[in-house]
Amino acid sequence: MAIGIKISLNEKLFLRDPQETALGQKIIKHSILLLDEIGFEAFNFKKLAKRMESTEASVYRYFENKHLLLIYLVSWYWEWVSYLIDYNTMNIEDPKRRLKIIIETFVYASKENPAIEYVNESVLHRLIIAEGSKAYHTKAVDKENTEGFFINYLKLSQKVSDEILEIKPDFPYPHALASNLFEMANNHIYFAQHLPKLTDVTVSDENYDEVEQMIEYFAFSLLECRRDK
Image (cartoon, rainbow, N blue to C red; front, side):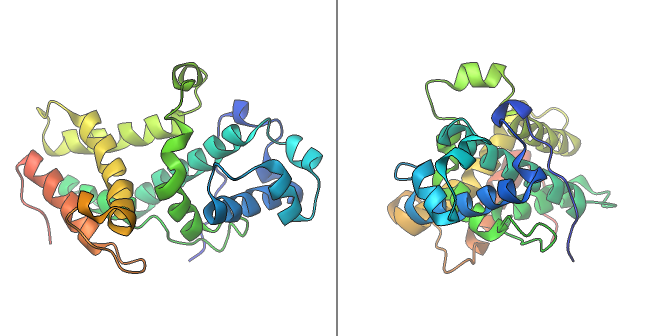
């Protein structure tokens, strides 16, 4: 079922909200596809404009540089995951069951939504796995954090932290566990695909079941509670 939503992001990330115009949506669509194809280092607005059959100037009307564009896309993804968590855990009272769904959502956030035609969530998920950490592993991270650039990630982490404390109120590291669950989901898919000696799981095509099982093992072992089947 298509989910009609409007993703709200920090206005400092863009000069003009690309979600509001056909050209802006085209920028989002083709930047995701091109970044996935050639990687962040090789990506630039000249190549993006060529792929869009437009001009560099048109892209610069929306984003100052490719770093802010990457943060925008990564923030969009964080907000999308947060929405999926709310949607998938609706009316579920058992916090252990909710955490299991959260882990599944982290691993399988590639669910495509036909209502948002300009975002291919499956490709975006693949992009986040390969390139997402480059949005905040930078020298400017502290300044950008004060500007609220990563607020969507912080809110997502807080949401999962709250669920962890529902299960074990005295757990001493809820934020650390929350962020690690998300990072593990992405890192171990990446490791399995490219650096297999860094992990103990395998993935084939887009089957990430072993990653999901591993993360559940870590989470519920730390929380010392039985996983719901």
